[in-house]
Amino acid sequence: MVTTNPVDSGSQRDLRMRAAVMAPRAPLPQRQRRLKGGTTGFMVVMHVLATVALLPRFWSWQGIATFAVLYWMTVLGVTLGLHRLVAHRSFEVPSWLEKTLVLMGTLACQSGPIEWIALHRHHHRFSDQPNDHHDAGRGLWWSHSEWMLHEIPALEHKERFAGDLLSSPFYVWLDRWFLLLQIPLGLALYWYGNAADVHGGGLGLVLWAIPLRLVVVYHVTWLVNSATHAFGYRNFNCPDLSRNCWWVALLSFGEGWHNNHHAHPASARHGLRWFELDITWMHIRLLQKLGLTRRVRQARYPG
Image (cartoon, one colour):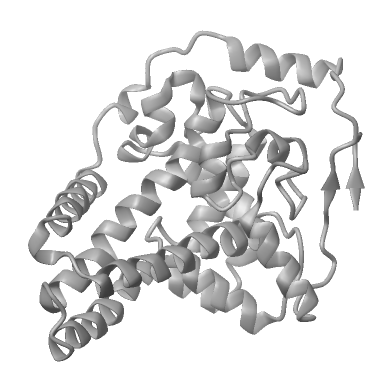
């Protein structure tokens, strides 16, 4: 258990960090100004297909149910698996459960788990400073998604920030082949949609389960990088722009209590006050009751 007070810090390090956060941003270096064709093209295609999924001909109750189940699996895989379990080691679970949660998170198709975790740890180290890859000081759109469409210098430090995962064949394989996870999922749903004569057929189920789900999960995840560094309130006076945003917390299963998280990165619980609903923390509590977790680190809001 971790308990701290929401007090101002007068340390020289915090003062330097605050100065960096508030300083005007220089233009992007020349090498970062060009869009990455592969990433940009993939995002455009996914957004177009997500729009196609919303056409009346592809609507079905089975599609909605498939979307809901996979949304729960994917978001929980990111928040509970990639983020709180692996990136911050806020608690421990058996190896089989960690791999299951990481697989669920990798279904989000937000690069492989090693890259995701390395970039997240890098963000905490340089939050809202000029070398933060989704630096909120460059504006809402940059921190939301534009940053990933350009070269990401932080990836040069991948080994430094995620070296503990590079010795695992499981993580290394997923990091290289994460896109392949969508193929068996798509084939299974295409077969079922046609076999069960679902309205919109197998194609409708695939559109709801993959591009529409991915796009919604993308934007929910990106809101944690953008909206929670711009909107909401602060429980703790961290030397960054992090804020607690209730509507992002609802969509992202508790990740929107971002100021709490930046104040206590190692805490498995992000919603620290009675009204801060943290759905991911509720799942961790369930795992505790089932005897599947140990060494759960939990911060508490004083008062």
